[in-house]
Image (cartoon, rainbow, N blue to C red; front, side, top):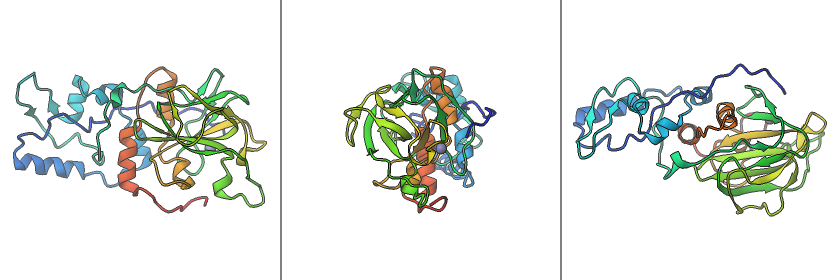
Length: 277
Ligand SMILES: [Zn+2]
């Protein structure tokens, strides 16, 4: 469905990995940090979408990032200085660091065609990117192809959840995030599970396979964390993509990695299907 854009731009989020931030901290400070990190149990997918980190905070080298972490950047060979640590932590701390995350470049997932997309999606977090048939669906970031569906087995009578996407490709990026595009008309030559791809490389062509049949050619674009094969209810989308789509379309490279790590920790890695199953 096409809904007018009214959403938010990518916002700022705390740099979750303030380098050296816990070194030589007094135990009282550690307790404060721990309490602050646990203070947002009600964080929702929408909250995480608002908490999109920008490139400055990924690098962790700007005054903005310093403000977000509550840490004052230390000069070389100078002991880190703590200021207040109680008011700026938001959301669960990521579980792992991603080497080179700040250097990754992202591409808008449809290349060479006019596109439109709304800042909304029915039922669960995803974005439908409308474009003409056969426009290229491309890898948003370098990584490895995860699951590929090459045959459209959807039927309106059964409307089985596992088949609604029709032809689809999912990719696990170097950022540890899974990106999924479905309703494709074709899979690009050479694209199969395990194929290593670069950002911007063609994965398929836009279509209306699956339950999009006759309802307008588009890519259903989902962002999630990697799971075991076949968990389509996670793969279809867990985090609202449009703040990142807006960023990538404007040539920026906001990463959903931190938000996805937080969501995975919050939801559990392989939750049961509870909606549109
Ligand atoms: Zn959709």
